[in-house]
Each structure stands twice: as structure tokens, then as C-alpha cells.
Length: 312
View 1: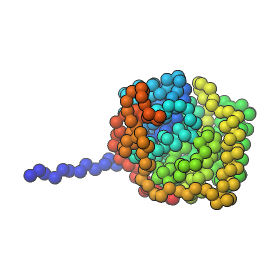
View 2 (view 1 turned 30 degrees about the horizontal axis):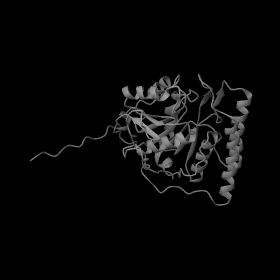
View 3 (view 1 turned 135 degrees about the horizontal axis):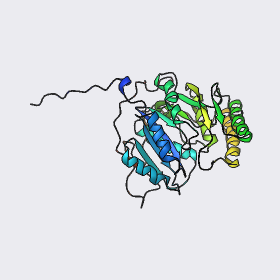
View 4 (view 1 turned 120 degrees about the vertical axis):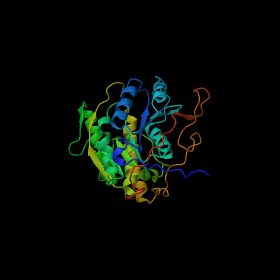
């Protein structure tokens, strides 16, 4: 007769590493000069987090560097995509992996140092404290700002946010920024089908759909800096696309054509090449499917003390 196995209690939240249960989704394309430093800085700010690099087949070898990092740090995972398909698609793909992997909070940020990893604790704090479901790192709220930008870039960014805020009747001031933290239950309730997956427009549309679903949105001030190295991926086409789609979103809403929310769920369905535990298929780069992931063995992290779906 064997004695009953004792259950070991989870450590109190105060004793868990900061960022436990958080997944940081980091899309990359030709970020070989940045990926090592930004990955280290993210995990220094949130030592308990999981970092998911989503690489769109970078010709400069960013994905291979990320694989090397994942090989020595179990907190880093890599999802390989065979071609550049746009920032929005990369985020949606990464969101699905994070939700399938059991994330409690999902953070999205750029890999070019324009989003300061040191701001991550303040970005997730309103969700951890139960005060918000979506937190936007805002350049245009008191205390926020932009440095190293010319007047033209400032006008485009600020003007785009004001235009979207006015047309879509939204309350946040920074709608074009991409430094955000999501409560996983809130992110998982958004219907991804039909999302216009551009750059600016993706950021606007996700906030729009979340707001219309009654999500509690908070803005925390950040200082946005122009990328340290490499070239900006902003283009005139992206800007025009954003303006057109904002008008389309409002028109769809007026016609009653906005898609509804997903039914409540504890995670997303894994994609065809992702295992049920959120890991992608492994293997060499030769013969990979259209989208594969080389992911380190997942760590079983205790969930954050946040009621699922709170505030929906």
C-alpha cells in the first residue's frame, strides 16, 4: 500500500518571479542587430516571463540567432514563418501560440528598442492588480512622449491617432502604438477572423474591437524612441491603408456588420503545426511546413491570481 502523495502548494504570488504567466510576443524581420540585446533586456525586466520570437523568415538570420538563444534559455521560444506576411499576421500567429501555451497576460512589443523593456512592469501592473483588461503604453497621455522623431513623423503618428479616435469614437489617446498588454481571457475573446492585418491599422483595429466589447482599457505613459539600428518599416502604403480601413470599420459598424466576440474560452485552438501544449513542431529548417516553430520545452508556471474574464 502506497502512502498518498502530498500536494505541494504553489508559492505565494509575492514569491514568484516578476512576470510569471506573462508571454511577450516579439515579431521580428531583419533584427539580427537587435535580437540578442532586446531579448536579454525583456527577461531582465520580467524574469518569470516567456519570450516568444515570431520571425518572418528574416534574410539576415534573426531567426537562427533566436534559435541559439532559445537553446540556452528555456524562457525563449521561436516561431518560424517562411515569409514576411505583415506585422499584424505575425502578432495574430504569436497570440494564438501564447494563448494555447497557457498565458495569463500577453504583451506585444517591437524588437527595435522603440519600446523600452524597462517599462514592462508598469505595463502589466494594471492587469495584475485587476484594474484593466488591456493596457496601452501611451505616448500621448500625461507623462508620455516621443524623442528622436522629426516633425513629419510626429504629425503622421499623432494625426493618425486623432483621426481614428474621432472616426471610431474611442477614448484612448494613443491608437497607433504597438506596446500593449492584454489579459489573456480578453484577447482570446476577440474574433481574429477578418482582422485587417496591417501595421498601424492592426493596432487601431484590435483596440477598437476590444473597446466595443466592453473591455476595460488603461493607458500608462511611455517614452517612445526611434529605433537604435536598422531601417524603419513604415511606408506611405501602410499609412494610406490605415486611413481607409478606419473609415471601413466605422462603416461596417453603422451597417451592423461588426463580427461578434468569440465564446468564452480558456485558450486558443492550436494551429495545425502547433502541439496542444502550445509548442510548434520541431525539426531542422529543411522541409519545414509553411509555418513552424522551434520552441523550448514549456515550463509549467502557476497562473496569475486574476479571475478569468474579469470585467468583460
